[in-house]
Structure formats: structure tokens, C-alpha cells
Image (cartoon, rainbow, N blue to C red; front, top):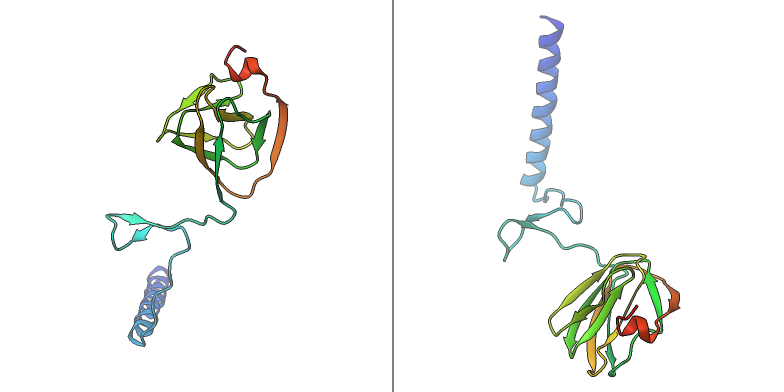
Length: 153
């Protein structure tokens, strides 16, 4: 018998033995190993494959701003932040971009380490919810002047 054929027979025997062992464990009532966390799998109530992801370190908060209220300084978080407008009209500005007006139902994403500020519109109270996407620290930057807040600078 050639070396190639005998290696094929050995490989086939090992694969077969593995299948027999796996089958025997299932017969004994053992469950197959669960996939690693975050691996999409078929799930009841969903079409296709999905998985829950770890949210350790995420934090949720809400803040209300009276008219003409806003952060005192540009600031950045080491984790990304999602902002959701609940009521009133607010303002959010990422440094170097125009002010974005947020109305109820609007959302915005601030990437990690990105200087920004947020607050209410000049004549309205604004309520927002925010999710900081992991453990984070905040660093402060330059003051938000009236020219910045009103979009004149």
C-alpha cells in the first residue's frame, strides 16, 4: 500500500472516530458547545442569525436644558456617544462642522475623542437622552462663546 493511501486511511479513521465521539456525547444528552459570545445564530423571534453583544461599561443618561443652555466648553469622550432628542429643539456641534439642530426623534453620533458641545435652542427647553458606548473619560476644551453657540463663528 502506498504512503499516500495509508495517510488517507489514517485521516479518514481519525475523522470517523471524531464523529463517533461527537455522536456518543449527543446520545448521552450532552449539548454541543455553544458558539463564542457575539456569534450570530438562529434565534426564536428573528429571521436569520443574530446575537446579543456585550454592553459592559455602556451608560445611559438624560439631561434637560433650559432655553439658551449648553455645555460651558467643547468636550470629548474617550468612547463614542449617541444622542437622542426627546422634546424641544436642541443643538449639537462637532468641532469643524456646522451646528446641527435636533428635533424630537432625531439622533446624532459623536465618535470617540471628538470635540463637541450640545444644548438647547435659544428659545426652547430641550430634553435629550445619551448613551456613552463603553467606559469613558471626558476631556474639556475651549469655552463655548455666544458666537459659537449662535453659529456666528
